[in-house]
Length: 98
Image (tube, rainbow, N blue to C red; front, side, top):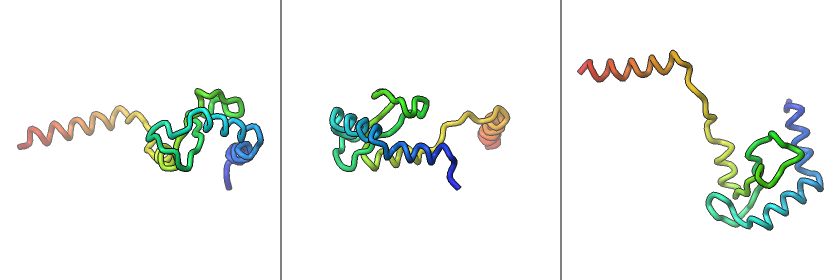
């Protein structure tokens, strides 16, 4: 089952308000902001912080390919302190074991 906020977001994407924002972004920017393609353009939320009250700076115009890439890239995270030390100690052990 999908999260209730996801269902609300999907419904929002079908509203006349969102469609107007989307068309405005497409008409002003005109091409993918990463690869300059004009094929299958989609409006990407850089952040969901201002969802339902977005400003143009909250949005990015992307082609379908760049949009998929954006959503499929690995999430950034900071490794736990212990893991970093373990990795570093393995590297040094390998260097000095030769």
